[in-house]
Length: 338
Ligand code: PEP
Ligand code: MN
Image (cartoon, helix red, strand yellow):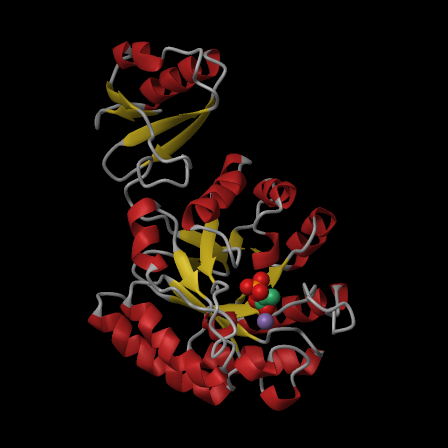
């Protein structure tokens, strides 16, 4: 249920409602909007009659949340969320966020150079895998903590917020120490224990959609993170499995308006995993911004032909700079900035 407060409700009125919700044995989630505050009551309500809360001072209405996800839902919060990602950057709101960097961190020099290049082109975030979830156990698994050190150094040198993947619960603390944002990969979207562990971290979470997850499952995964205490979730579409072979994954950009209708969370698009081919990436970047994406997560490599992972889908810093220029024009055309 959500308790919608009247626009004149004071902090004390809200606290009173929070107290009642707790008395019912439910969890509260207070969302302060520009116009009014709403309090979501989360938990098993079968044995609770919440309608009495309507009598509390300054309560306008008590309404059920129809979606299975609650705190991720637009029903609970109408205004789009703006998620701070560190170093003064954020995802959501008017500004479209470019997050770019190599698939994997391969060396100190590689990540420093690419960070500098994407920063100059207008990126606000630096991506790069330290722990790589590889389908094949014989392929490059990432440089681990060494890579985290290089990423942190590159972030500090450029002012870019660092985004890197955390693959397991026991890595959450370590990755949180070096990274501004915790990336949860497509293969882990259903790893509910990891979602909860990241929900207890103070770091914002970039949650990738499972490659065969429905939108509802995706939003329920986000709900796990928020419900565990971390409201700062950024959704990331990275393509889904279909029968197609001309792409590595099929990138469903219709998810952008669908997310905007269902949720207040921002959504970024990863056109690199989303297509698997560098030549498709600029077009999908442009299309994503036109469709209302809040940002892009793009693989950029100084020497794609020799990349240790995902070279085929990595664009060069030059192509990134040109793509960013084009996206900036498209952003302006749809009422956004970059
Ligand atoms: C990546 O971003 O390099 C990655 C492994 O992504 P995904 O989890 O979407 O496959
Ligand atoms: Mn990759």
